[in-house]
Each structure stands twice: as C-alpha cells, then as structure tokens.
Image 1 (cartoon, rainbow, N blue to C red):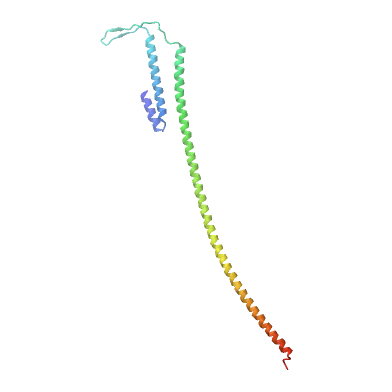
Image 2: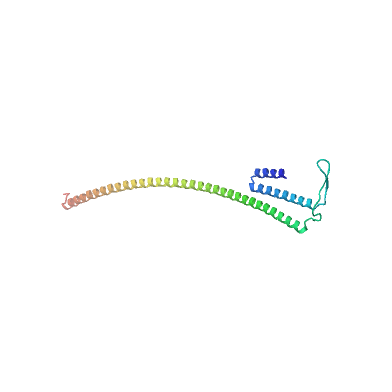
Length: 193
C-alpha cells in the first residue's frame, strides 16, 4: 500500500497535480490500514481460546475473560463503514473539485493570455494604419502647400500682367486721346489747306 501511495505521489507530481491530492491519498491509505488493524483486533478479542506453540516449543494457552463477547452488530459495522466511505468520498470529491478548479483557472489564464495577444496584434495593426494615414496627410499637406504657393505665384504674375496691361491700356488711351485731340484740332483748323 505504501508503494502504491508513493507511486501515486510520484505520478501526481509528474503530472503537475497538487500535493494536497497526494496527501489525501496517503491519508485515505492510512485510514484504511487503521480500520483493518481495528477489525483484526476485534476479531482477535471475539475468537475462542487458541492453542499455539510458544517460542521454546511449549504450548501457550490463551484464555479470554469474556468468551461470549460477540462480533459487533451489523449496525455498528455499517456505521463505521458509512463513516469511512463518507470521509473517503469527501476526500476524493475535494481532490476532484480542486483539480477542476485548477483546470478552469489554467484555461481562463490561457484564454486571457490569448485574447491579450490578439488585442496586442490588433493594436499594432491599428497603429501601423494610423502611421500610414499620418504620412499620407503630411504628404497631402506638402502637396497642397506647394499648389497654393504656385497658385499665389501665378496670381501675382496675372496681377502684374494685368497691371502692366492696364497701364499700357491707359497709356494707349492717353495717346489715342491725344491723337484724337490733334486730329480734331487739325480738322477744325482746316488743316489741309
């Protein structure tokens, strides 16, 4: 029984089971051994006198004071059995509950870790997209600034050209007015003749 308990202990430790499980198995084994010893003691008390050989070859006669002492009644044996079974069952159930709780905890931890990794991957992907968009906005701002600078330059050239054209038109209009005035004066003065 001790070898089986040690094998269970080693197997349990190798599989990552808690020490509580192996302690419960060892406690249950010790309880069974105690109950077997009690049963043997009861049987020895209720047995009839026995003749045995002594250490030197002589006969030993054992006598009981109460030879009519009987075996415990069925109710007492059943109560002991029920109590032992209940304790054993509670120990096994506690071990199973602990194993289930440990397994659920490990699964929850692994799921949480996996979700964190997925979330981190999504955050990295989102940050890369944001960086790409920022670079595009920066490029668009540069292009827009360049276009506006060129438009301003073209507008300035147009204004200068329009100003030059306006000045030329006024100069032309002045020359034309002066020329009209001369022609009119020439015509009025009878200039051909």
